[in-house]
Length: 468
Ligand code: AOY
Image 1 (spheres, helix red, strand yellow):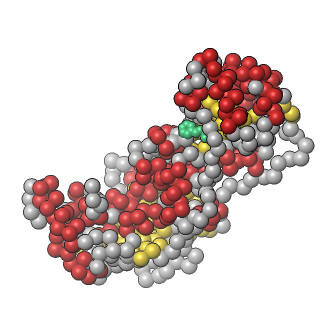
Image 2 (spheres, rainbow, N blue to C red):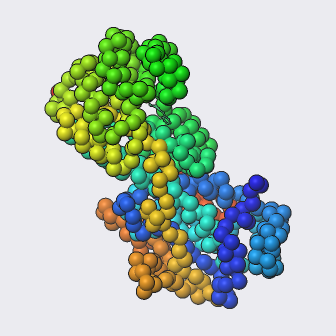
Image 3 (tube, rainbow, N blue to C red):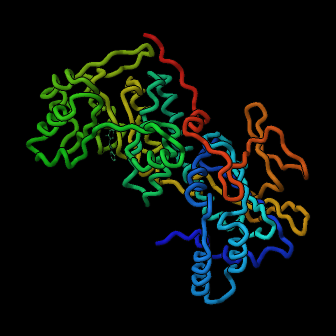
């Protein structure tokens, strides 16, 4: 399917140019989250969508003609699609889009119910262009929601590390296992990139490539290690589980190595194979063996495996009074992992006296796919129009759902001490210290963000480990 920006919108938007009042010169719209699962959002992903779809010369006369044909068949009538308008737009701007997009810098943590970005047309002949782009631009809901969820899990994990162990371990405690469980390669790339705002562990290669291509990343923003899957263990046959594990140790003699260990009996594997038959090889190995249980109730299995590994490989008690396994062995739980089960597992481990240091999680579908636009109630709404030179605040305020009431006029995001506030800009005034910056103007990217800056803005305070 050939990409055609003119067709990248909802069908009804083709017809909206006929619906604005006569004399409409400007449509000004904004994006906000109206609440949902979390209170603070990490703004992320707009730069990808702008560079990929919106910046530069992004449509041709051929695209307009194709859209015109499409709409004629789709609606069964001529003249619903704004052929003359799009052709005039192309003549005037050579395929570039006369829009101004302002946004908070990526990585900024913004409370819900605040403006995060605004869109307006800059050429009064094309006021219909602003909301034509809603369908494309509102997709930022997805990377924002993934980055937000990933950061909330980081908060949970950090609180456990602070109580029971070493908070500086946080960067590799939530590994992205989600590549296979998403609906498209683009979803994988965008979602995995969003996770890497907060963490450094990922198996979703597409996210790294997106950051390298769209966020100017020169080095390596995400890391992984050799790890077994069931096929590489079961291919040896049930009688040769030990040989499969021994081969892992032999093939990867250094560094961190992960091995799924529940192919037949995870308790037997930990107790007798890892803990007895291969124990000396594990202890003499130059690196950490990470055992991955992959079935059963996560909190029960993780605590049981910790107990077995503690008996077989030993542990120390840290300065906070929690048990830390022999440094040659750790656990990664990758089955049934979501925002809630991570807390269940960490709470169960804490109760049993185990530091969070011992545990990492692999999270797949629940990180990248089990989210929707309503997880944080995202909306793109018009708050001002200019009609025949007169600026008018516009809003809806349905009696049937007051929660859908809207902001009015031109909006600014300001920070007073530590809280954010959205204010309406008074006519003709500017807002000093406003946080929305022009990132796109008339076809050009005006400001770029680096992953380094994005990560720093979204950072959480990490305390130093206590000395024992
Ligand atoms: N990867 C840490 C490195 C990755 C994976 C990917 C689905 C890894 C497993 C592991 O330790 O066990 C996609 C399931 C697992």
